[in-house]
Length: 387
Image (tube, rainbow, N blue to C red; front, side, top):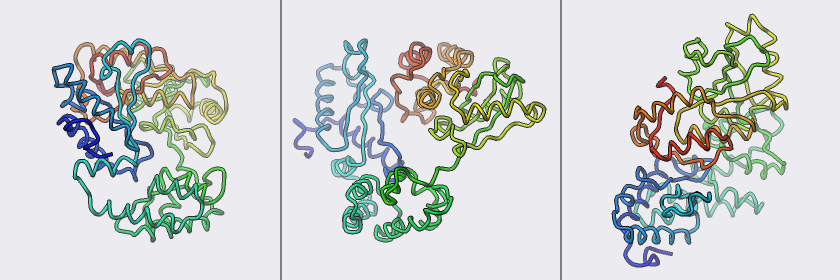
């Protein structure tokens, strides 16, 4: 399908969207990503569309957008909840999901060809089937290239093929990558499935580096509830006793999405660093915490407090995969919500948050029934450091 297959002349608003998608790819290429690109369609990310006043003209542009779904790598997601179905389709928290297969189309249609990358990718698509006999591994490498410029695809594949020689060593994934790929420690991020296929194992034997957890306590109770804190400055403030609402909690800082890593509760999947002020005087507190963290007990209350934005809500959603009963911390979020309602907030583009996507549903009633509706209604965010 080409531009000519979209009925009529391509609307200017759609052309602007295609260029915005290429901007997102160039900011972080697919080779460096673990996930597809989620691009929310809102007034902040696609102003050319949402500034259109006439309903019929909007519908014309939207239909042209929907036609893109015939292209490999494009998917349009909508909020499917019953209460959203009576809204205009562009009011249902739409999100365009872009996979690596869409990049060639986007670059062809916008005329924005990064020659070195395009040439390298063409060579990769030829080199992989020529060197890799395992069909599943071949497919995986084609969908997730190990892009290293200016190294040739042949050089990269040769180094990748040498990974089995390290399988008997107790190495972390970053160590394997650094040894094999010219000191580049992160090039195998997201390649665990390919490595497992290469080694013919159920899972990749090289673990990610442990998640580092900083743990403080505003309690001496070994069974105290746990509060994950998203940002370092707020964690330090709470640990020092400057936020009274934190009294009675064990506090954990794991930057951003690290708190939701699936390996967090495995003994080798996380490294815990205790603040000495409490734990040196109360060894039972530390022992109890480690037994809970690396055990299977899901009865201990777990809370999360982060920024009042879509990313914070998404971290909560992911955290609930590891801790199914984790809840948004009301004491903290109520204070942030008050600032949002008082217009002490910021727009997404003011804080480089335009790429954040609405998680839709977290499973936490307070987040789903109070916080997310407020974010959608106001379209603005509040950082937790504001308190």
